[in-house]
Each structure stands twice: as C-alpha cells, then as structure tokens.
Image 1 (cartoon, helix red, strand yellow):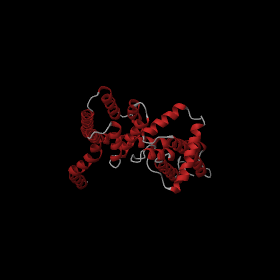
Image 2: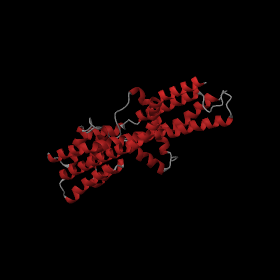
Image 3: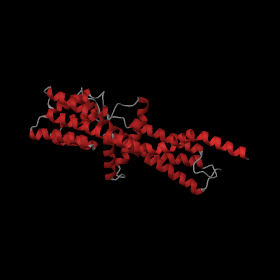
Image 4: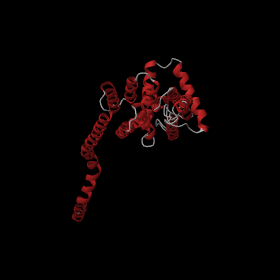
Length: 317
C-alpha cells in the first residue's frame, strides 16, 4: 500500500463530498421561512419577498433541506452552542443576505453533517488498506476539519459576494431614491418603491432596502430601523446612507440634495479604489513577467547565438 497520506479514491471522494456539501449549503441557504414570507406578502403584496432569502428550492429537495434545517435548529436551541458563537453565525448569515432561524439551522446542520460524514467516509475508504496508523488518523482529522470548516469558507465567500453587490449597486439605488423623493413620496414609500423597482437590477440592494422598508412600516422608532440598515451589512457606505437619512429627519435638511451628494461621493470613492488597483498593477505584473515573459525573450534573442556557439565547440572537437 502506498505511504501517501491520501489515496486517489479518497481524494476523489472527499472532493466530491466537499463540493456537494458546498453546493447544498449555497442552494439551501436560499430558502425562506414560509410563515414570514406569507405574512410579508399579505401585508405588502408589491414588496419583493426577500425577508429571509430568495425563492424556494424544488419540491423534491425540500424534504432533505428541511431535515438539515431542523437538525441545526434543534442543536442551536439545545444550548450546546455558545451564545456568542450563535450571535456571530447570525451576524455573518445576515451580512450574506440570509436571515431568520432557518438559515442558522441550515448552516449548523451542514457543519454537523460535514464533520460527521466526511470522517466516516475517510474511515470506510482507508480501513481495508495497509496505511500507517499515524497517517490513517491524520487523514481522519483532516476529513473532520474539512467538514467542520468547509461551510464557514463557503459562507464567507457568499458574504463577500453579497457585500460587493450591495456596495456596487448602492449609488444607483440612491439616484432612484432621489427621483422618488422629488416625485413627492415619503421616505418609507420611496425606499419601498426603490426596493421593488431595483429587484431586477441588483437583488442584494433590493433585499436590504426591502427589509428596511418593512421595519420602517412596523416599527415605532424610525431611527433604529435606519441604524439597523447600516449595521446588518457592516459596510461604511451603507452606514453613511443610514446616517444621512437620520440627519435629514433630525435637522430637516433637503433629502434629495443630501442623497445626490452622497451618491456622488460613493462613485468618487469607487473610482479612487479602481485607480488604486490600477496603480498596483505594474508591481503585481513584475513577478509574472520575470518568470514567464523574460525567459522567452532571452530564448528568442540569445537562442540563435547559443546554437552557433554550440556548433563552433563541436567543430573544434
């Protein structure tokens, strides 16, 4: 038996299960809480149903997803998970665009299944071989780590993608909000209208504004609802947007002018970041040029001379 820590069959099985589990998490986190979605649609038929995530999965997959969600929710309610860890998971899920207990249950359930099934699969794949005990147990621990940390890695990637979409689409949403304010709509109605009209252009921004519109409608404290708009994502641009809306309510400053200035500042910041990345490009290209381009240039320029010198040495001998 080979002394390598991973056999090809085990590597293929681990990769397949990891990719499958990652896809399951990405698709499963796209679920909604049915009761809250129906209530949201009844209370406001025009607003997109984005309170707890995008659309439901196919009916054939709902049973498996529900089972994983119930398993994770039971573990979350059992008290085995520390309160600080649960709060951190909920904040990360919220920043990734998924809210409610269903998303938390799915996330915890995927972690539990991953750190249970992957070691079992590794054990079943290696138990019949003649692998060294140290290598065998190291493989089991690596499989356990992949199952435990894999959902965290996928969730962080989804969170980064969601925040990037929010930051990219917010200036355009502000321009649309300015148009709604100039048309005479109140703040709540303007945010709701932008959430509806912006759903096809940028779903992430539409979801955040839809949640804010729902909180403004049912909450008594408008300032808290606007502050929550910035705290959910943790983006500085969203916090500035919320602070601008709060300032217009407190001091009576013109909403359209403040939003127009804020949208211009956000576009300027984006342009500055692009220019910064462009300025770093020559430095980043130095190493690839040294490794891949300069050797080719040396071969093209010095190759014929090298061939001639080699021929001269052969003729001398």
